Length: 148
Image (cartoon, rainbow, N blue to C red):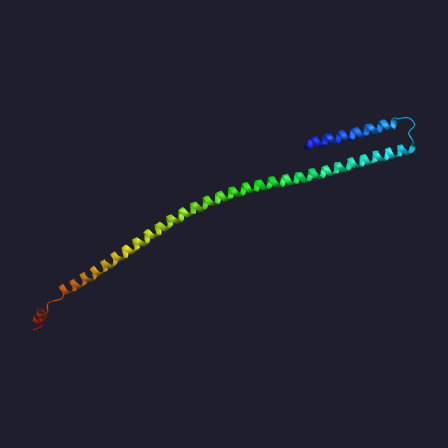
């Protein structure tokens, strides 16, 4: 489409230039007509330059838009990749947190079990000491006999 426009513009300019050359080559042309033809040629050149400047401005703007769009696309791809990586990291951390929680609960249960066993053992020790004290003390009647 763009190359067609360029081709049509060149064809138009070429045809106008040829027609002007043909008219200029005719004999007995009044000076006023030649002045009008020269003015038309200048306007044609001016219009051609203006169109070329517009084309350059349009091409520049088009390039900027395409560049911005491609940068946006690349940024989106990078962000999607980062989101995917972050989701994977969150999943990994959640698994680690779950494993830590499981181990902490296991430690707390083991601690509670050991505390119960410790309490039972302390009570047994207390009873054993109490029974050993009672077996080591002489009977009250025997204690009276040694004093008399």
